[in-house]
Length: 243
Length: 365
Image (cartoon, rainbow over all chains, first blue to last red; front, side, top):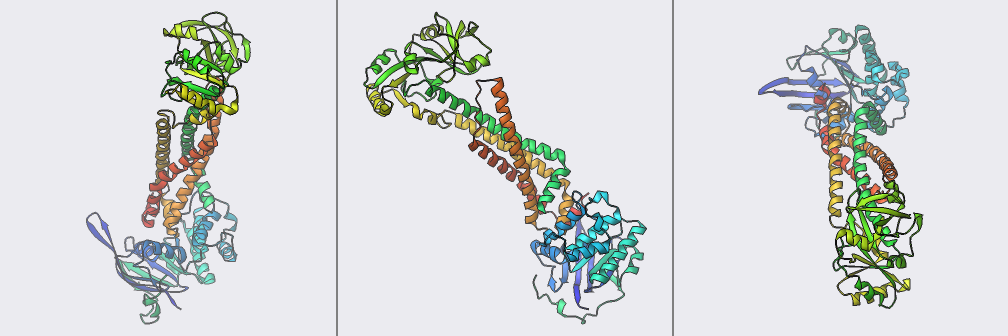
């Protein structure tokens, strides 16, 4: 499979008061197209920082990040926004649906921002069917259960046809039953739509649903059960294409 | 889609939305009613002055277009001089006195020549003064003061009896004999203005020229142009007053919109973070805030315009002599000012919203 995403010696340092906190201390990894990957580690290991960088929401302090061959590490705000709009779908722990809009409108907003027609097409119909939320579209977030809200958030993230779906602790706000439902749906989406998914979690049970497990500790990758050899796909390691 | 987001955003915060709309409406009302009042009063005064029936009026040297500021400095003998000018049919001297008790009015002190120029009053009740200390009032003044013929009123420290009520629109709302006014003021009878009726209305300009040659220093005005002369730029201080009203209204609008949108942005930090995380550009966020502000301003303009007309009618019913003229021109200007205040007021909040870091905004509780 083709490499979709690659990070090279990724570093992120935050300034907390006068102290520099190193969230990432040189993370290098590659993710294949169509892969369902879990990044696991304890709180504070840097997985959320990694997720925010991969999601083009923040810039690394040093290192490279390639998404489909484009290095996003040195992009300006406008280009990063374009990457978020065109390449990345994000699912959050707290769902982050727009509270004043219905489920359908939440999905339509994402499609509108992406520049897609808000008329529901076959792709979206398939997603809604897979997520079993077709009958929830007229409801507002407050009228949905946590599991339903997360499925709407998932549909919203996928509606704009992203290259990669990033999920930051997607079951963190759900009970066991709903967690299981949502995780099964991630797997279904990965299998049926060939959607590349990276899940971040500190929950060891989640990894049984994924193809690959990358473990992090203290801002570093400490294990990877299915790494891509450095010379397997050299094309993406070169920052040639611009977005 | 944006439309749906804007409407749902406004509906989700009904109190804030209502207060902001009311504030914009207040801005519009402030402009339309106060400007309408100044315009209405001056234009109505102009129409009444023109309604005397004269084609020309002669005022003291350097006199302002506003009769209220004219001094009674012209000798009555000047009227005889004017009557000798070829083409002049009648000349009516009027002694003027501004009365600010119970409203602003210019009292007309008239003599028998006034009828020659005006063609006489249209009597609604009562009749002409038959003895001293009697006054004639117009129907709007009578309605405003709930007065009828025979009623006694006190003006210029003199007790006066209403002899008759006439139709409005012929110069003043209150008329008395020049002799009575002269006595009440303790001044000799002199004219503040001479109304001149010409024999041939086609020859007004010719007669005006003749008059200007005879009474060289005096101000001679053509009544046809009088209404156009009653503009803010010709009335001392009115331009400043209008500008001040507009500026205050604009500042109110800007501050309210700023406060409202700033509060909204703070409240919706997380929502903005969600939009930014989904790839919404800064332009999208700024556009969203501006469009939401514009909707609020448009609703405020509609509500404010409606409220202004309501106030106009209510005041007209309660105070018949109070004229508020709400023109299309000023409605358009008020709308522009309201939207301008919205744009200025939401400028900083929208930039603040657009520049929010998505990660920080999403972490906002």
